[in-house]
Length: 69
Image (cartoon, rainbow, N blue to C red; front, side):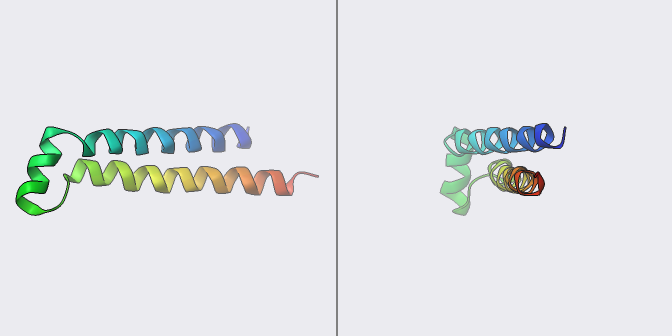
């Protein structure tokens, strides 16, 4: 069960990263980048959230395989 949860977190993190990449290529993000030099907050949250959740899932998978005899 723990391995399935960690895998789900890893897949969810990767999905959020993909959403963030797609959001960074949007018209709204281009306009925001034109005026502020930064992409939209939505893009940043997708990327940061995806990285954090993906790392948690990956650590859970590595820790689970190491502790199993």
